[in-house]
Length: 112
Length: 112
Length: 112
Length: 112
Image: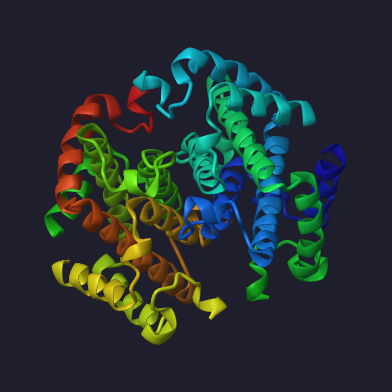
């Protein structure tokens, strides 16, 4: 992951794009890229979404690539380690969603 | 990152949540989490977005944690390696945005 | 709809919020509100999404209200009439999706 | 607005697309269209976002058209009147954001 982060930094620097990469703009870009993944799934049934044809799979993989790039860019600008952020949040989620209450249902913790 | 992926899988399995984790639902969840990051930035100026107070920083970090968790979950369900997807996409982006054309501007490649 | 637009303008003016309502910020707000509608549907099956309980219905209605408010605010700032925009776009959509090609399938027009 | 709603219904019926228009799918479509508006604003400054060139204005207008179409489609499927939903929500917003507390700041009501 470190190599990837450096590669992205270099890509941006070579194009003189740091000026556009405020956290505000990067989170917009991240949200737009997730919508581009979503576009491939909007009309699919649950079952169809599990069983993509090869063309769709490749297109989805590309959009996931862009999404991950912007997530890493945003983290890099903010000084956040995404692995640490995810690990810390998982601990909080485990408290918000104790197994006995959450098992087998998709309720939000505010509705327990 | 592998540890994190396994930890997330275990978390889901313990709560019997695999039934909800179709790729279609996961990409919706991913998009919702990115909107929750965005919520912290919507009324900020570009400058303010670079200089978060401690409370906002912690809240943003939490939302980035959730976003990364769902991105990894989606990749896990689809059998996509996010690092590989990002590396592959960076190669394509380098072709779509050659330095001489892209330098210092934020035009979409379709507008070159 | 005109009454509603005026009411929203007054609401914003009274709170001295025009300063925050750049089109850039308003489109972020619009996107965040649509994600808040989406939150109610993310774990639902297609069938469940057609048959909301009363509480969920009321919450969805509220989020649709906020979404429409921001859509109207964005249009108002940009000087766009949403009815005209929709009517004009429907004409283009009819050309992009001729009945004989589009009937019964959800393909994007670029995949015909 | 009524004419527009009927026109959209006819468009969908002629293409036999009702099968795809579950509320779940429609809210995904709505969110994707808002991201397509957002795409035009992501790299713009606040000032630039107020002053679109003609081409961008026309593209934004088209995306706003699609967004409004999906918002009306979603409302139609759910049996929600968007004007009523917005009016009702404005009343709640007036209570959540009393003028004296909200004036001149963009804080969320939970942070008052």
